[in-house]
Image (cartoon, rainbow, N blue to C red; front, top):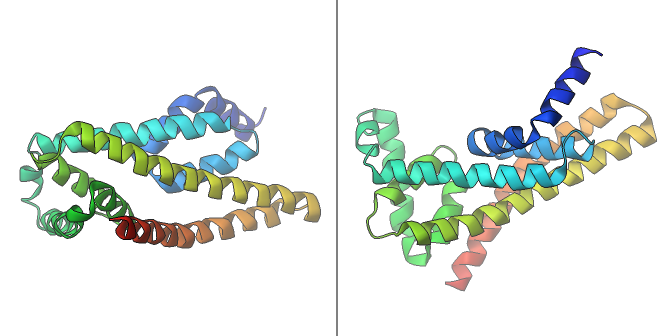
Amino acid sequence: MDALQLLTQLLNAHSYLVAFFSGALLGEETIFVLTILATQGVFPLWIIFTFSYLGVITMDVVWFYLGRAGIFKLLKRFRRINEAYKRAGNIIDKYSSRGIKRVLLVSKSVYGIAILTLMHLGASKKLSFKKYLVNNMIVTLIWMIFIVSMGLLAGAGYTIATIIFKSVQIGVSVIILSSLAFIVIAKWFKNWLMKRQELSN
């Protein structure tokens, strides 16, 4: 048994944890890659979707309660964090009148402020945890469906490329190009969701 086979077996045996912590700590790009691996039989797809989703929601709750506990007051002492925190506050002030879903969608689309936005929301006594949780679950579910769908398409592209061209290198090239396309389309999809939310309000 070579090292790659051993690593694959270890990952598969702990797929629940891999998916959960990928969602909680590593972000959407990792979930995208895990979905591609699921198309190749490394992981069960339902585990990747379900436990990554739970990981994202769990960590979002942690950030929310850290904000409610006032931890942001300590972080604001650092200049860069304070600037990002003010940026998050500006986004909340700008879009809060259009609904909490709008705020969450915008925060996910702007790099580097998502966590601070969640903490800012937690610090706000006007927003109940129940309302935050329900809206965040809806927004995250929509976003997870999109990520997994893109991963499935990329995985299918890899499979087709390796069958037609009989080349793993071409298949890997398809995955790399798919990953770049994912970043671009993800940005577009977030903007599209925000526009729909704006029109509905």
